[in-house]
Length: 179
Image 1 (tube, rainbow, N blue to C red):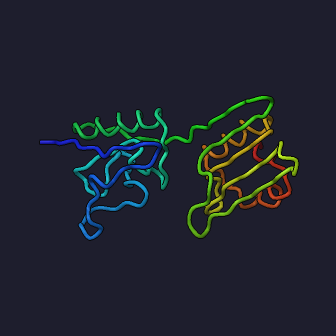
Image 2: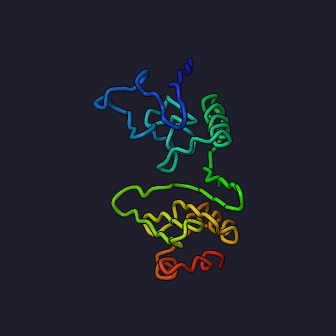
């Protein structure tokens, strides 16, 4: 018999206090949220999770469309069929009073190999921040660079390998991401 229980979540910060197992309890692993595989299964093969309470691909998403896709995969797999969640890196774009903003993926580096490539115009109207980990783009923030938004969002979604492009990126030439 399958049972379903869910911790409460708000703003991508799971309230694990209700359900947090002891770290010494075998079969459980979590950091900020519970890690899941592409079937939305936790480290315990009998427990599935979705939404704000999970990390997929080493990061929590905290977005409604992603949570819905995760929940679908979790339910299908819980009921004995097969469904794989591919992951998502949905960009957030905003245009307010002539300022274009894009935020996609991670906004801070994770782990010791993470790094930030930052270009600041100095006048507060344009800003570029790229998060790179293990040589791959993991996230970005752009302010005032509408012309780069699509190529940067696509590069983050693809987790583009950029080790060879770092000198250009560090000098502010982000057009290399469009190639």
